[in-house]
Image (cartoon, rainbow, N blue to C red; front, side, top):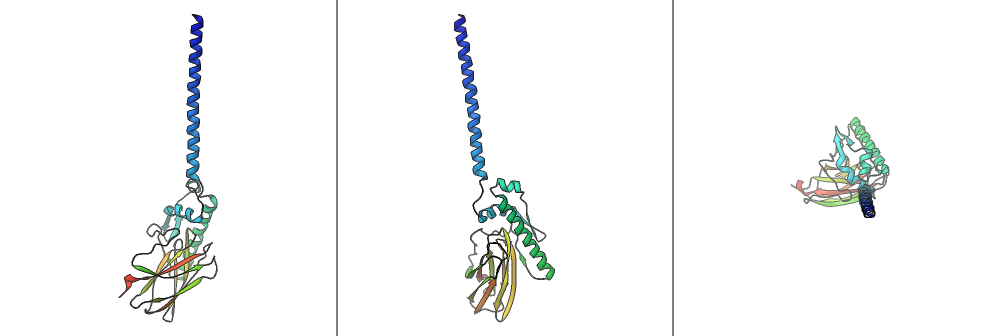
Length: 229
């Protein structure tokens, strides 16, 4: 009788050990699963464009100055590594300094609100009522490029848009038309955009441009059919 009771105690003890082992294994598997999930969520993005796309929603314009409402810790949790985060902060500082400099000189600059004008990180999305007139590449912090195109009769403005690997930056240059040289400057996501009125149509127009953005960029010029008379 004592032997049977002793055997039952051994069986119960063995079952308890198995149960504890299964629970421990379950926690271990769950822990491993969570670690994998966290890793996949927090994996660093591959390019500057991808990092910019994530940070875009946290970029705001306050009193004509850009502010990135994103802590370094939050940025890392979203997949933006420290190098890209530091780059973004430096780009914002440079752009804000450029805006202040232009304002001090009385120079006209178009400051794009990132929460109102969303620009694709790799593709400039054009309105359906516009047609591409020309484009050119801008070297990194060097002398810019240019393009020349024909503006049909009745059109009175063109839109100049920048596409750079900077989260926020600026483009600037001149529009040469009818013997006049009209300066332009814009800041915003990927370089920003601005619309320039031209003094005449049915003529050739030349647009030059450059950017201080590290990595250079591209300028795309469109003719606005909405201004046709």
